[in-house]
Length: 374
Image 1 (cartoon, rainbow, N blue to C red):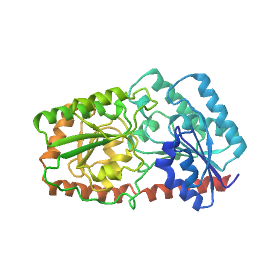
Image 2 (image 1 turned 180 degrees about the horizontal axis):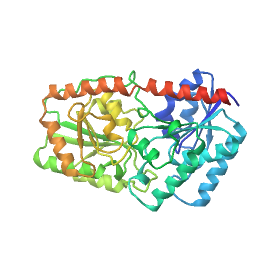
Image 3 (image 1 turned 45 degrees about the vertical axis):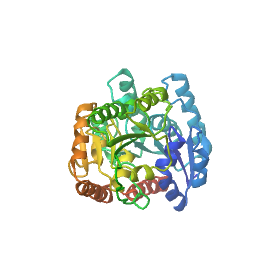
Image 4 (image 1 turned 90 degrees about the vertical axis):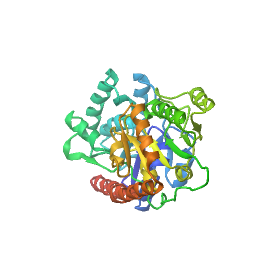
């Protein structure tokens, strides 16, 4: 139907946490929004946002051709029933199989390459296969949004996307009205706190974070290191619950569990850290900077877009625990006033470059363009 938009991702969690603002904006603009994703604890919450949820079983870990063909079939029949004005896709499998199904039905597609994940960190047969499939899938897309300039350049150089439909967005943006400046807590004998917020995956640089924590804890005891994020993630790079518990038992880190609202964790932090190997543009760094926290991130694809080295935080070499340790030492050596100034400049960068409203406006314009043609 002309006023219906289907949005699809590999988890309901992703759509709720990263695209609720866009969903609300589409509904306010008069569209009916259908969310298609594997059911999880966030599926009902998507309906509370105002969209209609359709379960879309998906094997996020595997590369079994039979299960992927089944996903393609499910997407085809969903789009055939709904006949939307446009399909908005996020994450690898919806981008590829959703685009293929839409192409067969003449449905307009707007893709979002929100970081290429673990499969693009290494050059393997799977990486090469995904590139070929992306080239086929994106051949008829009306718009392909990229969250960082490196991924955009990679797809253009490899001929995976047409230059005239490719655009860079400032990540998924950050809600500057929700993530507001918070003063860093000041209390006698309070330890300095580094926080890493991410799914518990090795590719997020969590191993390097733990090694750096060990090194600094040997030097001083007034610093603590905290992990916040989901365990038991369906991903080949997942860190086991037993491994995290072993680090906690060792006394090198605290595990804070997971949360739907990271503002309290950011407010309690002195510095937010993410030495990830590759990202789209990590929301955790944007949210931390919006709340005026200095950050330390890997000088890797996606992460470097969120940080001005030496201005809003520090960049460290990817996969290098020693360099991460040195950047942590630099952060600890700053005065409270210097760290507060880094935080203020981080907030200014978020206002200047990463306001979620700008992302939503670009989407609304793209959707309106394809809806008119539909």
